[in-house]
Length: 116
Figure 1 (cartoon, rainbow, N blue to C red):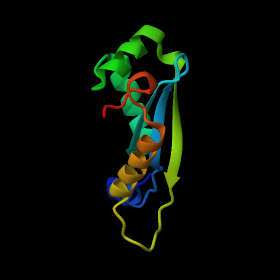
Figure 2 (figure 1 turned 180 degrees about the vertical axis):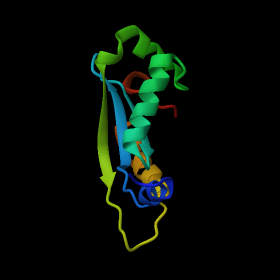
Figure 3 (figure 1 turned 60 degrees about the horizontal axis):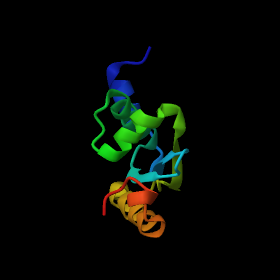
């Protein structure tokens, strides 16, 4: 069995899926776009917040309640490949990429849940 110190060391070097994602309502095709340095964890966080009724986006929360969890899908739009030899601010890079997607897809008002 690995020690706590060994597990912490392994975690430091673990590669997470970084990129841009969307939560899509399959009834009306509205989308919510955002980015994360750990897409798997952010999917879990959003799902948990939505299921507990505590998501910060009221419109998304209301439609989650109205249509039900099974009418929403979590999708990765773009993934950023990590370079092991280069120090980068992946959070900043992911946010910039998300802004490009938001600018292109315009997920506002009748098209989505993002705020202008």
